[in-house]
Image (cartoon, rainbow, N blue to C red; front, side, top):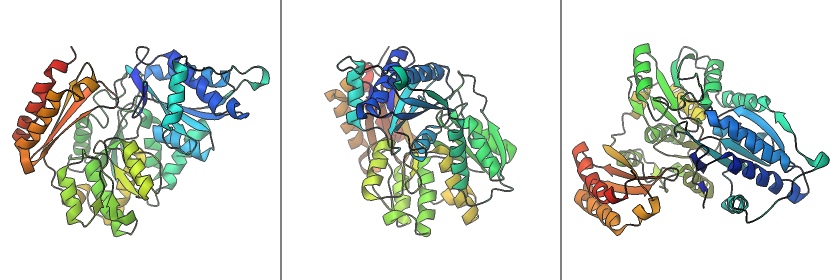
Amino acid sequence: MKYFGTDGFRGEANVSLNVEHAFKIGRYVGWYYGARRNTKARVVVGKDTRRSSYMFESALIAGLVASGADAYMLHVIPTPGVAYETVDGRFDCGIMISASHNPYTDNGIKLVNGEGYKMDEDVLELIEDYIDGKSDVPLATGDAIGCTVDYMQGRNRYIAHLIASANFSLQGVKVGLDCANGSASSVAKPVFDALGADVRVINNSPDGFNINVDCGSTHIDRLRRHVVEQGLDVGFAYDGDADRCIAVDERGNVVDGDLILYVCGVYLNKHGRLTAGTVVPTVMSNFGLFKAFDEAHLTYETTAVGDRFVYACMREHGYSLGGEQSGHIIFGDMERTGDGIMTSLRVMEVLRAERETLSQLCAPVKLYPQELVNVRVKDRDAAMNDPAVIAAAEEAGKFLGDRGRVLVRASGTEPLVRSLAEAPTDELCREANAFVLKALEPHRAE
């Protein structure tokens, strides 16, 4: 794919992703789901809080209505809210404007089909051809021109869905929420308030520039301090578009996606709700998680990195739980994509049912030390295909032997090569990564 990566069309706003791209995406989608089939398309559009999201929203909607589609504006909402409302509102497709955990200077356009799944690649390829001028679509005229609908009720229905998914009260529970100054700012607190929790929120005052800045799931230290200083029972941090969730236990310890998979997997299996007793993590998950699964008599099936690969595996085999260390967790019986707020509610379900603290529930998992190094490169493909880099990764693996592993992979959304070392000690991790970092030096971006 030329423009669309593993998580949509993403790039620096008005540099690698500009308003013309957005307009053309709207034009093609509006025609593809509407006039092409001699009908009028209905498309729902959401966005996160970064400044450029409003610009891209206007461009997308202009393209949609120009092609004859009706555009329903959800305004600021989590990415999973768009997926939910696409299905619940019986829309032809959904569009989310967000660059997730990236800095505010970036943005992205994510497309979901009418079933709430990520858009099929064959459709994305057609959109790319249109962007590049390889095809054309007609403009709507007269009464065929689409309209724009202010669709706040869609966001309210999503909030109601989250609340209804929790059949328990959080009365008396002190919960900390870090909304990353992003999409969760308008949704998370109302959900926890409705369940009766004593909610202490931080980073929920977006200004267009502060999304993900030293906050949220990728900068967890502030929430850790907040939980300890306020004497809270648990804390949850979301990313910019709230499809990820990282938790903090009552002691201020980080509970990442691996630990959340363990806590929820054991609980669901205990109550007969874990299909085939199987969890679907990725190859990036910690060795300690796999050992803990073995001890808990749970099976697991690993996938490539990316929630799309996790869900593809879950969907193919009917599995009910999967996710990533980064906090993308998918509960297959309730959703089609990762939902950070839903994840936090499911963790709260376990806490309330088991009557244990989060630190107690995580205690059986002994995680291996990991060191993840991100190297910004000039060309991801060139770096990954360099024989010297491939040989260095193999040499690092031989160095660790059965003591650990090294995993080298390209980012799907940024010009980065990631080297993950996992071993019994931090020093061994650093020594293993050194092999790969030396080989990547010629590829570093200035």
